[in-house]
Image (tube, rainbow, N blue to C red; front, side, top):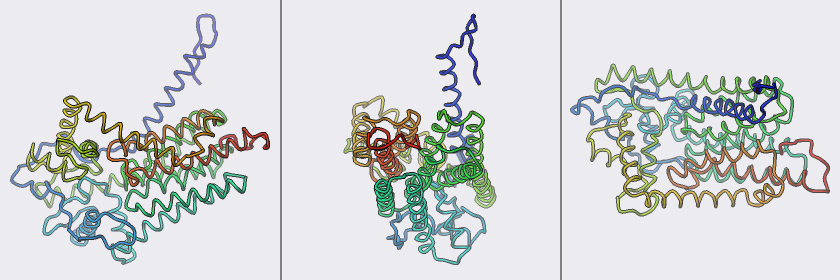
Length: 451
């Protein structure tokens, strides 16, 4: 406990509270750093241009239209196919085979789906198509089932249970339509968030700790499938756990410690897998050096500027960014310096044409704000007229701000906003139930103070 006394021994509440808040926010920042590892050595110099072409392309097998029942990007299907072929040739996970070239799987993309589909193909003997369908359909159905059970336990009123269950089914339906790796953003939220809201109104016991550990594991694994897919949920859990005044400090630290343990374990494992891949390629492909093993920030920021028509020829297409880099530095593959080049391009645009950048960003933010209002609907009105505890409001809005980064950085299309949509829908339902129980004279004081 922080103690701040003045010369007369009187507690200086304001400065103490401020220091306490800063300490708690530092915990949030530390947890976010845990799920942002930088795989690859950024200090190495570029290899000779004579042997870089195979790493300066996106060498995915062109399979035409992906034959999966659930929507899956064609190029990503070719990427997974190359990963499976690479494993059959080498026996090393996340080594892809394109033609006769051994290359890292998922160049410039998140390698999680490649890894899990590879394991399903090897374990069950299924085709890539079937493995992808089973993976995503199971993900959506299990998360929907967990969410429906969670809201039935969380809410006491039959009408609110029906509304909440319908909301979960609706979000799951949108997730199924959008498909691909984006599905993990909303699936994670609807599966875990109702249960966490339930847990914060109860004493910390073994089930709470087990649930927190599983949540940490799920967030970390989701991060490997879709970069920062679990970060909005992580932000919500950390903020509420830190600022909820009912839990004792020791209990809060216990919850956060268990959560961080769940975050670290998968990251350590996947780091080991990628290191093994890099060691193999460094031995068998002399031109290879470690590359970035997740979506590139400035790559996404650059093509995101192509959301509106512009005079710079920027379009929301990976090839647009790749060609820009090649025009500046030929044969620059998906190495760390690739993103550095695009960083310079984006910052130059900000300096030279700020109106264009601001107009693009404002348009995206406006569309996302409208999406939140539509998804939360009457819940926004109830939240204004009957506010929930401030730490719950802070948790929701902070999580939604983090989830909106995808849309602001890239484009505000539904597949990029699935996490934001799920959060806004749950926020609307929780706000409605809270107003019904707390601010309506027809009902007694609530047993669950958070919902």
